[in-house]
Image 1 (cartoon, helix red, strand yellow):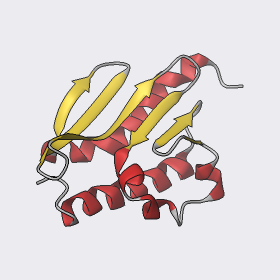
Image 2 (cartoon, helix red, strand yellow; image 1 turned 90 degrees about the vertical axis):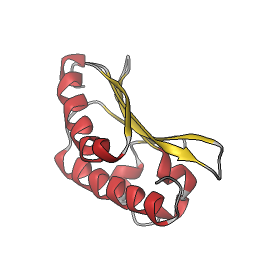
Image 3 (tube, rainbow, N blue to C red; image 1 turned 180 degrees about the vertical axis):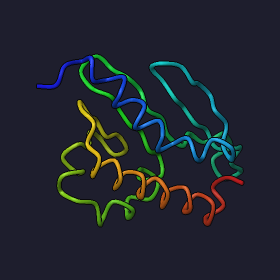
Image 4 (cartoon, rainbow, N blue to C red; image 1 turned 135 degrees about the horizontal axis):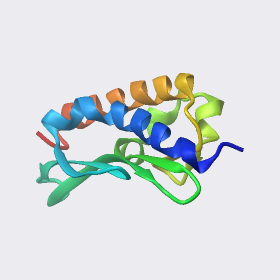
Length: 123
């Protein structure tokens, strides 16, 4: 089992997936354990929408991606390997750096961001 000492590296890799979207979103938190992005105000939902985050937890590093909760069809083509890392409807947990899965997660994040824009979920 990977040591918890791997978590900072896992966190940095997952944060890199979200960072490209920071200029168009709102960075709510950015520290050594949490990177959190919100979208702008949504008329449909009457609040600022959570987009995603990477968070160091006790037993793993979590990657939250709200578009897959709002648009579950985004998950139809994910690999069984990535699916194994899912907890709940919009959370993926990792204990070590997994380059191939992080590449797939980056592509899923991009699709989710594009879907948010296309559907006018936020501007």
